[in-house]
Image (cartoon, rainbow, N blue to C red; front, side, top):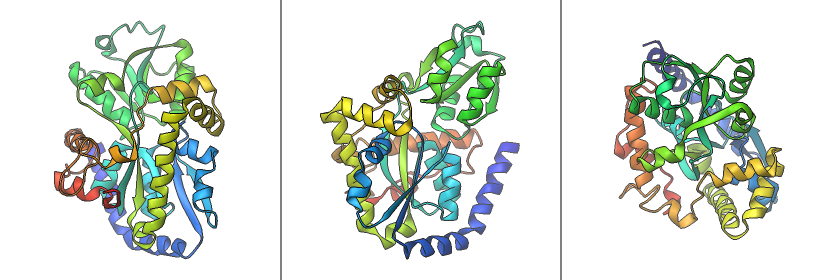
Length: 333
């Protein structure tokens, strides 16, 4: 119940700050700057940065990248007008929708797979998911990993039989090194710091096969979208270019992602191999985002996730299918 009350209070705070959001965003619209919130992962945004795709697309604008450890902080920045675009897990996109943050779902950066894992300490005595009973498991709450973990625990009948700890990725690594946690559901590059003395029990590709898809997505501010629709379309084209690069030159994609994020090429390759980057045509097709007339399969999966999150009391209501359809950027159709 405390978690439920916390989210209601957050929602109310967001509603009260909407007037401030508009003022802050409108001030920025008078500048020649585009502000993009990112996650420090070897994804399409990282590749585009390293290849200077953004600067080439916007030669007369300043492109500012702001790194967030999780979608929670990215949503706060969108709420306050601190960024124009932000990448986050789709579960945090659902939080943005239910909190009434004025944004649209612009792009699916990557479909999660083996890049997000449930990993346990090798000396913990945990050999199977059933062995997690009574153990301490850390994950960033409201993230795709949190959702995947809760689905895993529910399917194993362990929902209320473990101790869940809400930690960002940096604190997960620190707690792991201290021996304060038995397991974690998290993503690369954090995973690479846990794998030396860890063992993977399951990952998000296993859940995908069972119909539970998760992804990293990019949201765009409605204020920015209304004022600069052409710039938004250019951002879509930049991200689509990186997806074509992965298809045409996988090694260059890995090298660029590794250089941008400061990780090894082997770790970058693990991350990229564990995700699916879809083409521009697929993005707004019936298999993924769809349109206002026909929802895509990915949107249907987000609606199912919303219902689950509401049941877990991590959002204040379960959005309708119509709300999800209206949440999707229409310019891709």
